[in-house]
Image (cartoon, rainbow, N blue to C red; front, top):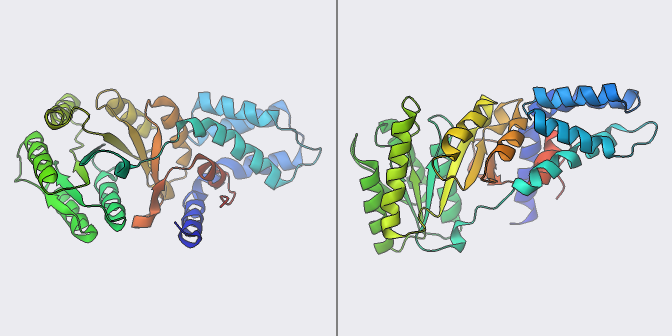
Length: 313
């Protein structure tokens, strides 16, 4: 990737997280800039971090790291933000990982899970476009066979990306579709097989049974499939994202998390407790509608943007 698009992405990241930044840090930073770093100010910081949905445990650890920074008698605002960014990044860096489907077997199977409305279908479409732009042969499979609108949306994304597309009639067996799609993908030399799934939580057990059935039939072809299971979470739902991670993460063998819609909320800090609660790392984040607005998660860049600093190149 050359410098121009990278800088464009970093600028969008800062802009996308600006609401979270203002909500979480502006008042605290101004407080620290006016008075010494004392217990009262640190308590205020911890409260602001909790209110920004970082969670009590993470807020306490971040505040403790921040308190270890040696400020001068009259710290400048930027120094305060830099110290807070370092404290948040230390919390997130161990939970960062890369999504790299072109480094694995062929076809590399990626299963997308998450509730309806989380941005799951759009995320899959953006990934399909990114992969085809890299020269990969991609197949998109619409295993949410209960929502015609989801299939139609996915078909549009597949056509836009230049990817193959597989679907079935309303009410068809999702596992059967996944099984047949894998066979076709192998026959046609597909590099990456992207499988969308339903996200109905009205009956959680039925949904999880359906997901596990898809996993079982894929393993009949390849014992390691799916090679990646991405849980897509919507940042705008705040702490509900944490509840969704608990529902899917414990049953669907999630290997990576995608956090979407970070530009639409003042609660972008929810990524922190999600990262800490999940056994799976954060792999991708989205801060806009464009294909280029879904990018690999970078803990340092995210943390700097979250406190109102420009990410470093």
